[in-house]
Every structure is written in structure tokens, then in C-alpha cells.
Amino acid sequence: MKTKTLKKNKVNVVTLGCSKNIVDSEVLMGQLKANNFDVEHESTTDDASIVIINTCGFIDNAKQESIDTIIRYSNAKKAGLVDKVYVTGCLSERYKPDLEKEIPNVDAYFGTRELPRLLKTLKADYKHELVGERLLTTPHHYSYFKISEGCDRPCSFCAIPLMRGTHISKPIEELVKEAKHLAKNGTKELMLIAQDLTYYGLDIYKKRNLSELLKNLSDVEGIEWIRLHYAFPSGFPMDALDVMNERKNICNYLDMPLQHITDNMLKSMRRGTTKQKTIDLVNKMRDKVPRITIRTTLIAGYPGETVKDHQEMLEWVEQTRFDRLGIFSYSHEENTHAYLLKDNVPAKTKQARAEAVMALQQGISFDLNQQKIGKTYKVLFDKKEGDYFIGRTEFDSPEVDNEVLVKADTNFVRVGDFANVKIISAEDYDLYGDLSL
Image (cartoon, rainbow, N blue to C red; front, side):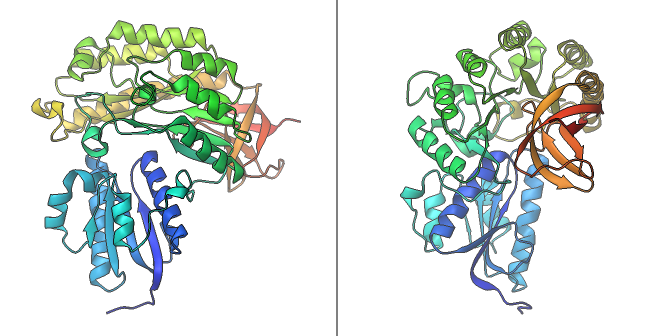
């Protein structure tokens, strides 16, 4: 029995998982708004008659969060608190038959490339003229910017190709149009995302064309920062770094997940590279762009990882001194190549190895931050929390990297604005400073 009044034309979109899912939800919301739906992202009022859950199916924890969310809204529907529940995204793409069987109360399940069919189910038209337009769920001054879909890489541990399909690049002219629209509405920072930035253009231009895309996006008036996320190390187009040097609005920042360093792990992971090639690539990047910040991601406890493999990883992290680093415990994903291997590293060992890497990185980050004291940086301010305005330098991406904190009682800056900040103290992952005139 219903206990509250539901708004019949209101849709609540719930997003789980990565930044690519955020973009998909924003596009969906833009289409719904153009069809005169009242749409909110992760509404706190719970008065929407329709809920659309955009799921993640990447690793065990993410899958469980998605399942729990589906069950929550399925139960809300049974209680009369919601009229319709729809599920889309990666989990739905990968496990649709199982989900339909286990959670039948959901009205319909859709895959990652079924937006037109989802809209049709809602009696909404897919408006082609809206390509590139969306409702941002991030603060208006920065936006995730998806330049391609899917992935052609054969990494043994990754289920993304199963959920997102093969690589498809968006044309440069379409991306420029989208960037101009975002800039017109106040976006100052574009965070380029893809399963693999380095593959951009191979399908439609028959060459790696990231550098040409960067030049075109760099020319868009109003875009002050362009940030590169998720580059594959094998076949990296070094001419993209030439553009990074040439253009002031391309951040000296690269997110390049390397996953591991020992030759036997890299071979088993099907990464198409070796330890020495990886070391040489990082050195070459730092030589080419001396101010570059490299963020990487690693995997702990991959099948067959020995104590020696782990120790070699620790030594490499210590020697390389990455500016930013994260690490995941290996997740044994069905239908991947690695699923054929025995998942023989105990969960506690995986966790302990991941914690050892992060403890080492914490010390490296502290040392690097101490070197910033007394220097002045251009900072983009994202929010105000408590006694501080909180922002980031060009070397930091939101949510995952370092933050710059400025006391609000002695400084004033508007959220979404840039300001020069002189660093006066530093911790492991936070910098503290004052506005510099």
C-alpha cells in the first residue's frame, strides 16, 4: 500500500561504478529532460514513480553493490513506494538472464548500448540532435568526457569487453561540438576517459589519433584544463605528449594503469609488455614532459603471484616513485582468460599485499608533497567543506588524488574558480595554503 504521493513523470537515476557510467547516466538524463520528464540524479526525496539503476559489473564488491541496490528498489516497488524499476549498465549487460530469473520484479533490464530501447520503453523519443548534450551530475566546472566506448585489449583479468563491447571512437567533430556545449554552460575542465585512450582513432582514422583530438579540444574557448585518464602502456602514442608540452591547457597529468611489473605476471595478464619496456616508457615520458604527474593502478594477488613477485613490485614502486597510485585486490571474473587459472592467493594475502603497497606509496606521497611547500600553484576549487575551501592542482583529479585546502576565515574564493595558492604545509595526501595575490 502506497504511503506517499509519487510524481508520475519523475525519474530517479541511480549511478553505480566508474566515471564512464556517470557519463552514460548524464546522457540518459539529458534525453529524458528533452522528453519532458522530471529527472533527478540519486534523489533524496524518494518521490519518483520511476527508478533507473545504472549498474557496475566490474569486480565482486561493485557487483554486490549493484545487486543490493536493485533489490532495494525492487522491494520498494513491492511496497508501492515506486511504480517502475528499470536496470541498465554493465551488470545488466553481463548477467541479464540471471538477473531476470533472480529479481523478476524489475520491469526490464537493458545493456550498455541500449539507450534508444530504454527510452522507447519509457515512451520517449531518442533525440539525435542532442548528441553531446547531457545533464551534469558533477559540479558544473568539470566534466567527465568519454571519447570512445568499449575495448579491444586482451587483458586476461578484465571483463570490460564482455560488458562494453569492442572499441568504438567518437569522431573528433562530434567531440568538439560536445566540448563547446559544455564550455558554454560553464565547464572549465574536461577529464578525458575511455577504456583505453591510446586506441583512439584506430577504427575511424586508421591511426592512433589522440594527439589530433587533443589539439582540437585545446582550441575550444573556455576549456582551461584537459586531463588524460586510462591510457594503456603498450603502443602509447608519444606524439600526445608533444601536444601536452605545446598546449598550456592540457594538464601535465596521465592516468596509466600498469597493473604489475614482473615479467611472468605481465605475460600471464596478457599486457603485451615487459618489465624493462614499462620502466623505459615511464622514464621516456618523464624525460619528454619533466613536469608530468603519472597516476597508476596495480593489482595484488593475481593468480600465481608469488612472494618474489610481490617483493619485486614493492621495489619497483619505491624506485619509480609514482606521484599517484592505487591498488586493487584481484577479483576472479568468470568468462575472462584468467578465470581458467587457479585463484590461489588467499584473500587475506591479497589484502595484506595491497596494504603494503599503499603504505609504501603513502610515504612517497608525503615526501613529494613536502617538496611543494613554499611553491605557488594554480588551483581549481571544487567545494567548501567546514572551515576550508577545497581544490586541486593540475596534477590532481577529483575524488582520487590530492587536495589543496585553504582556510575560509582568512581567504575567499568562489567554488568553480581558479586561484593561485602558495603551499604553507603538507600531509600525506593534502596540501594546505593561502591565496597568493
